[in-house]
Image 1 (cartoon, one colour):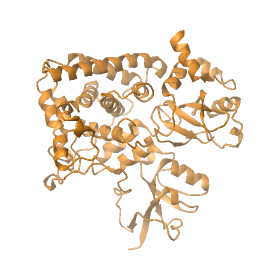
Image 2: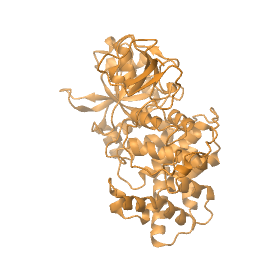
Image 3: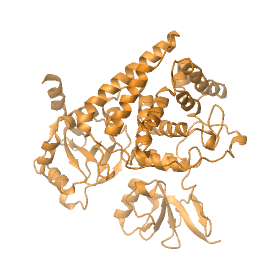
Image 4: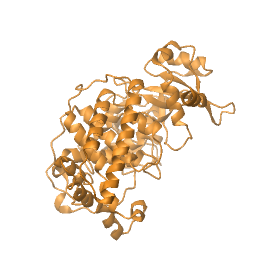
Length: 479
């Protein structure tokens, strides 16, 4: 049959090509669902800001020039939509038990959108959420100390803190994400568990799950690694384990299950999440190597959240990637390591530019995503960072713009001395950046955001509220 679609790098796009597929869901981009022609260089730049690899339809547009690297091809009648992009992230090898690869596929998850509405702005929820995070870390520390001393009794204190966290996520889904990415940036032992718990709860909220189910997701994610207490630190920290060391490492799941069984009044469903959160859809996980519908739903969700954080967090990965690339990598795992519809819905729940993402605007400025617009996820509130006079380093100030209100954003940027605004067709996010590329004082930026009230920021169109980051810290510490 004649070749119809070919997969190429987004870097190799040229004018006249017809883009018929991306390496991420169409719903996470501003592009039309049915595909589009590349008309000019701006179209190419826009595609590159959202995708690493794309499919082009050679029957509807220009073919790749000679010498272009082709990753895959599809012929007429070949409707293979699952293998859009190759594996881009080198994860530890997992031995697959062929007996479990043919497991019964699970039913698609029932998504009930609109069940929860944002009722409290981030600015107001932040302080309450920060107190909950401190309490959660305290409860986790206490739990681990009890386990180490063999005096474990119950986890009622942790359960109450989880319930408080869920209530906060329901009121304002960005508050915990904002805290974990912008304020709690230390190397605390439990940050990975907290971020995974927050991501899982965020998904549950997006899917319209019951409060009880969301709390189950959050609790299971918090306790998923408790069994690592019994694993030697040398093995936990090793990036290259031998087969024997890998087997020891993987034993943390069974060890954690045994520990949790000793806790009084702990919901057995939480233990089930811990038992299965390392299993994978294609049977490549551990410890049992089960797949498909044999993995309980809550464990499937926590597994995706765990993998996403491992890829995108500077405190979990030696080479963390930007959120959009992490989304692409997770999307490549659909129908392999993870259930396809769960992957798509998870990506929709976190958005392309989560709070705390460092981005480059079409103006050339660098900024940090501060707060999401629930009905316009590609147009969040941005802290636009000042640059020092030599333009090579970041200054100590910022202005805040809401990309949903482009007219006001233009006024603020113009008044702050950005002379090139008039030549920029649209003020928007051009791309996100790797999290460890720039040395940005995230704590100071978040303080400046909290110290700038909504009323003052709206009134400052044309008179930007530029807060020196050091000044903001002084105000907080010495007021």
